[in-house]
Length: 104
Image 1 (tube, rainbow, N blue to C red):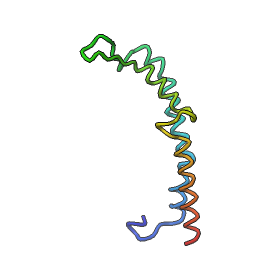
Image 2: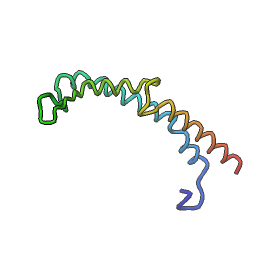
Image 3: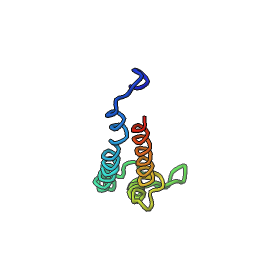
Image 4: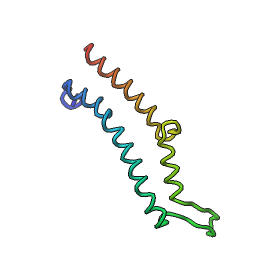
């Protein structure tokens, strides 16, 4: 709105920097829940699994990859998704942006 009209209402700025407070944990919880509930189907179907022998001499089990993905979501091991780090970063960004708007 600021680029198009030259101004942005204060509620728009607040909404931009506050919706992640609810949406980010909801998204992560949904991803973890969906992976967890899909595990029995993944194991039974063996979809996306590559078994040896094959021309690449490579084996991949999607079931164990999904379990690894669940382990990555544990806050202490969250290197890839970085949920605690990203959440704290966004809290800092929110604080900076909303305090800057009060000064203006």
